[in-house]
Image (cartoon, rainbow, N blue to C red; front, side, top):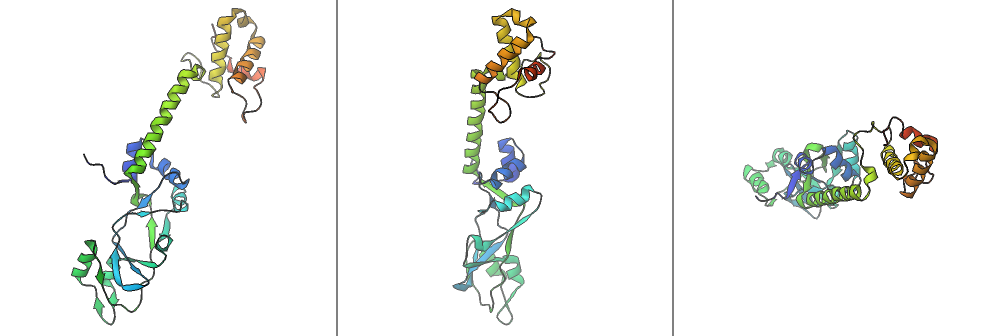
Amino acid sequence: MIEPEYYSLAEAAIECGCTDVILIRLGSEGKLRFYIQPKNWGYRMNNDPRTVYIINDPILIDDPVHLKKIVNGTESTMYFSEQYPDSYLEDLDEIEAAKFGDDLELSNQQIATLKAGKKVSVVRDEILSQLGVPICKDRLLLKSEDLAQLLQKNATHEKQVRLNEELKPWFIRDPKDPSPVQLWYIPARYFARQLVIADPRLLTKRSLLANKVVQSLTNAGIKKRGGKLPFNTATVLKALSNVVLS
C-alpha cells in the first residue's frame, strides 16, 4: 500500500491514537507543521498580472498563531502574501464569473486548463483584491513524514516510560492500596514496605517509619512541589494511612 503524501487532521489523529486537539496544540507550539488544502485557488504575480497560476500543493501554515486560534475555538485567515509577497491570491470560481477588459470572461476551456495545473494568459484591467486563506480544522493537513517522526517520538517516549518503571519500581502502584490522593503517595508506600521488610519493628513505630520514608523519597529525588524541599513526616503519615505494609 502506497503511503499518502499528506494526511487529513482526522486521519492523523487516528494514526497517532490521540485527539485532533492535541495535534493542533502541538502545531500552535511550533512542534508540528500543518498545511492547508487549497480549494480551487490561483494567483497572479505583480510583475505578470496577465498570467494566472493554479495552486496544486498544500500551503504551509508558517505562523502558529493561526493554530492557536483554532485551539481557542475560532477560525483564522492566512493571507497569501505571508509566503508569496509579490502575488495576489484568487478564487478560480470567482475568476470564472469575473469580467476582464470590457466584456471578456474566462472561458470554460481556460478554467479547465487552470484546474489541470497549467497556466493561461488573460487580459484584465485591474488585479483582483487579495483573498485570505480560511483556516479551519476540516482543511488542515499533515505531511506523512512529519507524522512518521511524531509517531517515532511517541514510541521512544513510551519505551522510556516503561524503562523508567523497570528501573524505578517505586512508581508502580500496588493494586491493594487505596487510590493515591497525590502521585508521590505511590513511591512513599513502596519505600515504607521496603523499610518494614528490612526492620519489622517499624510497623509499630510509625513516626520513625515516616521519617525514614522522607529520607528515601529525598534520595530518589522526590520532593515537594517545586522540587526543592523534602516532605515532612506528618504529610508522609497521611500517605500511609489505611495502607497494609506487612
